[in-house]
Length: 442
Image 1 (tube, rainbow, N blue to C red):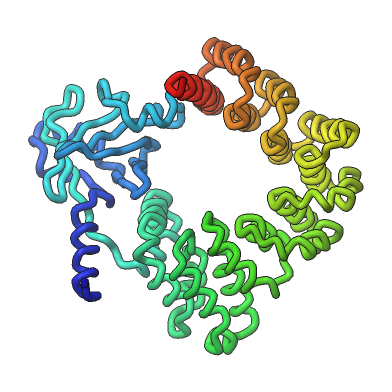
Image 2 (image 1 turned 45 degrees about the horizontal axis):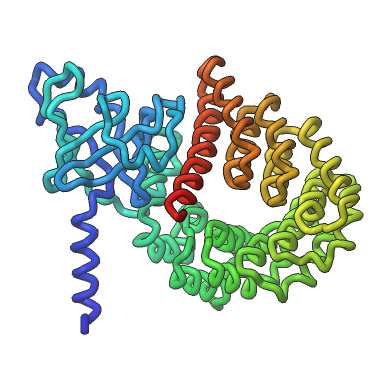
């Protein structure tokens, strides 16, 4: 059986073999006559390979997907700077780049990635993996005014959360550190789906040491550390967080945790918040959580809120009714609320309306989403509508998606429009994959 030291050695060996990390160009490795062009192409950015299979050239907005094939590192761009390529992500991840506009293929050797040449520029062009920097150093740089350096430091911290969370939590709780350092560490700290990190931060929040802090500092640190649970997708961790932080009585923060954790015992409290909360955001969040928990027994309590004075509460209530009511009259009333807000509200709330139609799971929602996709003024809302049509999966959406694809092909290919077209192509690809899967089963 492995002892701790042996297991740690295995982990370190696996980390050493992983290509994840930050790479910078080594100008001295290139021929002298090529160094000017190499500096122009790669000298003002850093390549960051992230654990999730994505990469970024931080400093020049190029990003995409990476994979390792033997000694080759294949990087596929997902577009041209801010212009998205209209290719499904699953296809991009497997593609072999055909030229530098589509991607790059490096040869990996140890800590180095090498290009034999880049277009007309003779190589070798060598990118060398940089040593990992201290957590405290990265925190300081991430808070600086230097955008490029700050973004790189932030991404390094974010990518390495699995190994850096104990130090971030320790810095946040260390009374010997400057308070701004502690706050930076607390804000950066994320639990995600790490049960050990969840247990550690909850114990820290209950500790006598934490409660000895001055009220103002304790309140700010508590808020930041409690926020570390927002990204978790693990239902057990969300449930644990809700149960341990219920004393906050914060509907906006706790309601999503109750939904993720499927905390059925929270329904009475959510109903209370849905009727009245400290903020309209909390009230809307409680209604959304009740909907996700399938609490349709409380439909009668939600119906009146479709006429609430706040549009956020109206939209959340209409989304609940459309998703759970079996009454055609109730659903028509809910649709009327949503249609009103898709035409009159600001784009953030229009996006909430699109989400409501998606979550309804009803084929009647296709015509509303189709109208949004073909006529809404906001590109981000049209993109969300295309994604919703793909997720709903009703085949009557296909002609609308094809029409949108033709329209975006003939329109100005701006950055925002490229995101719409990408979403349309992704949705059509999902229908195509579903058709192929059905064909294989028969």
